[in-house]
Length: 61
Image (cartoon, rainbow, N blue to C red; front, side, top):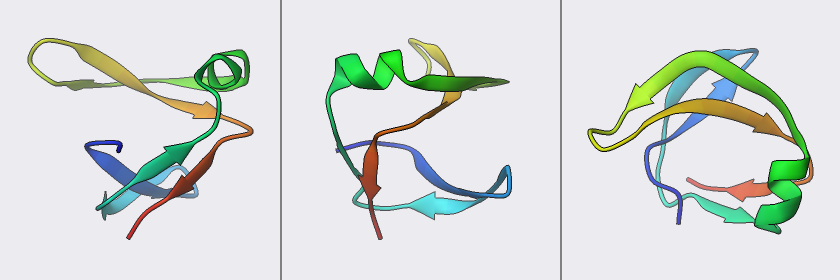
């Protein structure tokens, strides 16, 4: 289950997505990263960027 997930449309964050699941191989995800944002999210213990990767299936409500 992915936490703090957002629906992004045309490069803009539209709204939070609940009950998000990511399906795929983690090694393939890292191989298929196409873009990394300059914007970061501070989770307290970590600061992470948004990433865009191909070949990953994401479902949510």
